[in-house]
Each structure stands twice: as C-alpha cells, then as structure tokens.
Length: 211
Image 1: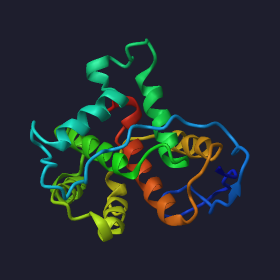
Image 2: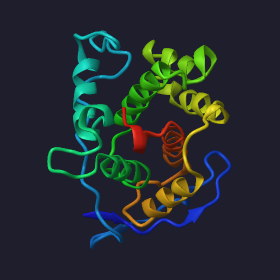
Image 3: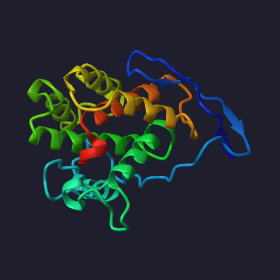
C-alpha cells in the first residue's frame, strides 16, 4: 500500500495558499486523518451526448441529484441533515477533502462548481455573461474537456475578483486543515486547480448557502 507524507503549506499566487509537492512513502499509514471517499461520477463527462445539462432527463440530472443528496441544500434541509448534523459542516469537510486528499474526484468538483454557479446566477451573484456565467456556458458546451482543463482553471482564476463573499480567515483555516490529511499533490497542477476551485466556492458562500 502507498500512502503520502504530510504536505507543507506554502504561499502560491494563484490561490493564496497551496501545497508543496508530496513524496510517496510505501507501506504504513499516512499522517493525519483519513477522509471518507465520496461517490464517483459514473459517466463520460460534459462532452457526452447523454449529459444534457439543464434537462430533467440525462446523466447531468442524475449526477446533480447525487451531489445535492450528499452535500445538502440549505433551502431544502434548513441547514441540517436527516441525522440532525449540520449540513454546513458536511460541506466544509467535503471542501477540506477536495483540497487535501484523493477522496473527491475532479469531475465531482466541476459538477459542484456548476451547481453553485447555477444558484449564483439565480441570485445575480455570478458576474453575469462575462463572469462565471461565461465559464458555465463554456463548460456546458464541453469546451473544457480533455486538454482544455487548464483553460478552465485560468478562466475561473481570472474572475476571482468578481467574488464578494467568503471569509479570508475561513479560507486559510480550510487550507491549513487540508494540509493535515493525506495528500495527492505530486505536482502543482492538481493543487492549483483544486485551490482555485476552493476559492470560487468559498467566495460564493458554498459552506453557508449550499447548492
């Protein structure tokens, strides 16, 4: 079995906080806690002809239901899950896992971002057609699939100044907590995109207001 040693936190201009490259260590247990593995998207992605974002029929509808069930909606669940736990805490734990472990697949991150942008658009908080509305439309058209994933990250990063929500101290605390668990960052490519995604979600009050 392969586990990872604890990552060191470092300053990174793209996201404010990031992680240094991890080193593999064969055998034994990794440092920190182990986050539960999230369900994995079971379809081919945004370029699939059966995806049908925005329709009540198709893979996107089914996957969106799965994500909403896992992460909750403050309007539906009034901030608590069926066991009485705090849904905001569940979303925060998901965010920590997304940044600092392999428990969250990148395709799930993209779906959560899309649902958050959809909600932000209804609230007039997505920056409009040239803001994250543009990024959402490009994603819907499958323009960020395969080799264009890096452009997706650049387009998200370029619009961070549009965000007015979020708490800088909370963002720092999330990154520091993520550094305590197993880490998948063998290079900065994955660290960068997950860090940018985290800043977008916190900036749109994902923890407090859900999807």
